[in-house]
Length: 349
Length: 146
Image (cartoon, rainbow over all chains, first blue to last red; front, top):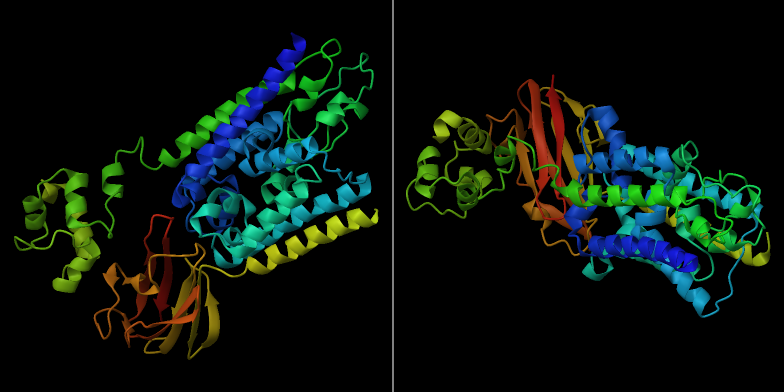
């Protein structure tokens, strides 16, 4: 019964990981960029200096980043342990390798400490390059993006090489990207150090069976510490669920992580809609210079004849014309002029 | 650290160097040369001071960050104060001297060299826009003609 409870806990986590992975796999490229918390970190470089977002990012990135940071302060980097698709795939790859008895590399403590510094270097590089260009620079090397869009033929070769290298290394090491190179992981593990909830050993009753350490996907040894304070801990909760039931005092961290994972998952599904819901000006905002006259009819619900009259265009004018291109035919009707016409509600009536 | 672990450390250092190298190849890069500046890089969203009646060359380097981009470089819109930036349109305070021509530097990189003259004082906003379903690009450079 208790064993099946532990199995259930594992399956619940795996299901959440699989749902998010498959959902992210199906996202169009444009939306994918806006639901990346790392995009939120990158865009902060510009928000602070110019009050603007870097291209391809939006308020959704900031909302997600805020959600991820707050939950990390509460319970550690749950995002890494439960939701990150790249982390999930590394975990699956390693689990498969273990099943077919691929020998595992155990990284010495000192080496681990040195390698962990690399992700802070990656983070620094990205922030520096972003601040110097205000572009989404990491896209060309990002294995996270490569994983989600490898089938589109749009991913830079370098990103694919890094992804394949990461997956190759995952055969021998658990979550190598997360532990040593992930820039988001660098931020979250640092913030997670100050988290309120931490994984605890069942003090007094621990028989040092090592079940928790074996279950840890990031190579930690939870049985050796009273509280897991390592910044590498991704709050997957697998150590708690692997602990022999008679010794287990609580599944506190696991339960909190589960709730947070569900909350963050909901935020991920809602975030792409943030720009269009709850905004009284949504209708106006969706009209851009790229909108065609016929598109304008759909957006405003006004008959095309009324729109042509408003813009002082002749009857029979090509309705597939973009608003910005009207000035190609009528020099004085620039986008500036068209926009003024459209934003004046008196004239729209 | 054993030999095997050195190999892994080396592998990840190589990955780090590759990441670092690639980060500086940006989607859009702007450089300007003129009477008071030579090949100066312009950060999007920033203000660049132009001398009244000064002739300048603005270079726009567009590197596809989504490969297999279906929107050709020629479809990049240049809007000066929300009007299309056209050759010889003298009422636009920063006058475009020649049509904007894109040249393919390599498979994924296109470069446009733009000649302009700052004819009237004041602030003018140049928007550079690429529209697509993958996020597109919409940035501005502010010309301050003094």
